[in-house]
Image (tube, rainbow, N blue to C red):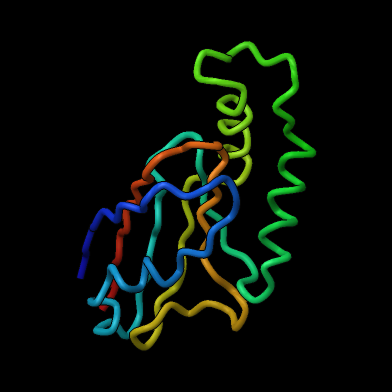
Length: 138
């Protein structure tokens, strides 16, 4: 089975947001798969995806703090037409990545006990975000 579906996420504030539940809710077909893969792609250049610890909110805050320290807004950026947070958002999105892939086993995502999928919103007012979910398996 192959399936492709878009999921629209409402605008989220700048930061790192756990979205595993939204992804699973959008794919009731997941329950029917014995084995497979789920690919999740963020169709934007100023937001990203990552797979990491889902237990402590401190992890999300630390990701945001680290990214802002390493990729500051106050820098000699050339691309500034869309505001001071735009070019840093592009760099953060490239470093974090636009996609994640997770295994599927026995009708569930085969993630680690403390793993979750995160949307990293790198803009102050990034707007709604579209995810492209591609599920395949048997």
